[in-house]
Amino acid sequence: MTSPTLAYDREANALYIRFTDHEVMETVELSETVYVDMYTDGEPVGFEILHAEPSRLWSIPALPDTASLRDLVKASAV
Image: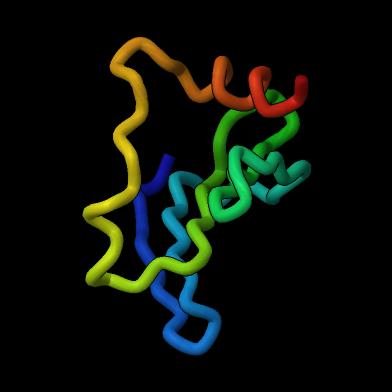
């Protein structure tokens, strides 16, 4: 696994956090502004956060301490 990378696109106002170099096989919508890219085995490749003005990132609600990415993806599929 590579080190996580961050990319901010000012024009699109989007932040992307990438965890691996794996190819994206599926994208799951967690909310209207947060998407997670997945590899074939369910491993997260990265997250995209839309409307990610740097001054507003502090207002993104914290995830519950006990929630796993797998739980979040399953919940969004319901």
